[in-house]
Image (cartoon, rainbow, N blue to C red):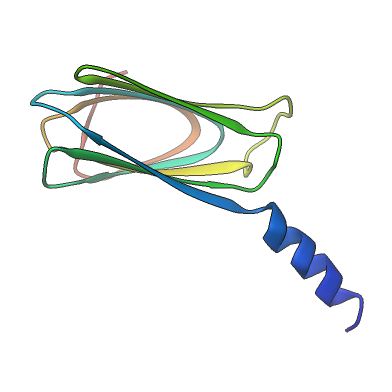
Length: 113
């Protein structure tokens, strides 16, 4: 058991959770690119876009930009593979959402491919 605790503490320290909030108007366009893990999309029921990320690697960087009614979210890593970063994004019901990911869970949002 002595060996297990140091391993668990290393795994916990590599996990990083962040939250970003954006206010948008009607028919906002949200583009999400995450080739390193799943994206879950849910309804925010208001004019807020709420982005929660959980990163499991220090080598993953997150680039988020808002230009008026358009939001672009991207994850970038020098490493390939899934399970490096998870996105949960709450969007207004009338949003247009474009997703590029290795795994997507869509719930109550319209998706444009």
